[in-house]
Amino acid sequence: MSTETAVAQKEKEALFSAKRRKLITDPLNDTNPVTVQVLGICSALAITVQVKPSLFMFGGVLFVLALGNVIVSLLRNLIPSRVRIIAQLVIVAALVIVVDLVLKAYAYDMSKQLSVFVGLIITNCIVMGRLEAFALGNKWWPSLLDGIGNAMGYGLILVIVAAARELFGSGTLLGFKIIPAAFYEMGYVNNGFMILPPMALVVVGIIIWVQRSRNKKLVESN
Amino acid sequence: MNPLKKLLEKVEPSFREGGKLHKFWPVYDGFATFLFVPGHPTHKGSHIRDGIDLKRTMVSVIFAMMPALLFGIYNVGYQHYLALGQESGLVENMIYGLIKVLPLIVVSYAVGLGVEFAFCVIKKHQINEGFLVSGMLIPLVVPPDMPLWMVAVATVFAVVIGKEVFGGTGMNVLNPALTARAFLFFAYPAFISGDKVWVSLGGEKAVDGFSGATPLSQFITQGPAIKNPVGGDIGFIDGFIGLIPGSIGETSTLAILIGAAILIFTGVASWKIMFSVFAGGYLTATLLNLLAGHFPDNPYLTIEPHWHLVFGGFAFGAVFMATDPVTAAQTPLGKLIYGFLIGVITIVIRVLNPAYPEGMMLSILFMNVAAPLIDYYVVQANIKRRLKRVTAKAA
Image (cartoon, each protein chain N blue to C red):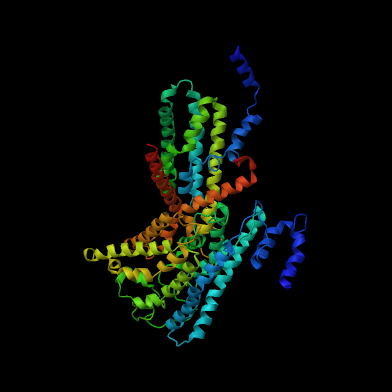
């Protein structure tokens, strides 16, 4: 009886119902994996010196997270609960190896530049977090949306941080000169601190600050 | 009656609640209390207000910095004319120094106070005098030719990231002036390290054989046989008096010690911290100096311990930076540990890390972060000891 009603409800729900759209839009702001849940910080600090590597990183995490979510969601009733972590790890690791090999084959420079951080997607807290918290308890379509949404929330912060660091640290964006040569002649100098990882932490902190002052929901009352 | 006071009383109503300019009440309040002793009543019960408030503390520190500042201004001019090979008198030196140093001070104060006022208006805080000292310290710890816009950027960074995000004056973890210097050091290393920046040439050509290397950077390569910019020998006394290249305010240990005497006499800064910084530095330098014979490829080891204390920013850091009451340890024992470790770490960085000829800035910032931990363990140890006494009595 109860299963029937569940099926009936599911048919009623549109592919992109408001609830499902929120799966994609929420991680961009209210439940952003980096600035609100403070996950995936290590890679956000390490590979955001320039915009280009962070775009590739975003692509890699998008692929792993979306597909990983779908696979775990499809297998969720088959995986015994006590070995679920290792099962998730195998799935994620397989996907990360795919990303790694594709990068090595088609974007060798990027693969070199991202180096160990491609492999470290396996331990990216966002991936494991979404698998555990969402994919294990939801059907494959919402899981896919949730994976895409969270990867986009992560990528958004990555790109903002990288843009700020590349612009002020090297005067370029995506490798193109943005700050005109006339500035340099007048005595402007690129900020070397921006290239160092501590400054990425400061930039992430400023983003969190701005986000919280615009979005009062996020401010804890104490 | 004082016309200034009349003016303040005249404009006051428009800043009060309901007035047109109420939004800027912190600005008015800041100016009024800065100019005159405020008539604020206490809110809960009756208290006696101590004469030594934040304002007087800050002014005492500014006063104590004056010898170092004046000497720094003189030294900027002195080094300039020395490097050009020209004769110069006291007046010329002071004039050239003022041309270099005054803009730094103006920019540091204007930018820092601007940011602070903006934050107070937005957050509706009271403005207090927290930036008065930082604003004077920042120009004193940079080289004379530091570009002004860099000082402005660093000041904004120091006030916003170093202080306001933690809640403003009295809440900061790191010393704001040193935060500004660390920012400059990592962001624009070409302008605040190396051999080129410490003597202001003013665009003119220096004499042959000129080298702007500071004593500390020469220690790395040639041990104690150091030269001034035109090749003359520098000895311990020169380092103590301070006619050597370096950041504006830090070269003269003598001027700094006069400031230290003022700070200790007025009770504004802790003598425990100053003493323990010097003690820690001296002991570590002695130990490392004993090893000099075993490692002939590190000439820095041959520097005698008392030299360490007068060259570079050691004395300046110990007297004006480490003693910052907000960022230092608070407990008496904690102050001794905190200062001692600053001295130890400074000398270790100086001698054992060839990339950093000076370690004062980094060691003070590091110990700023560790200060609450030190206090915590000092307090815990005290509690434990007293608890033992109580239980012993009960038994």
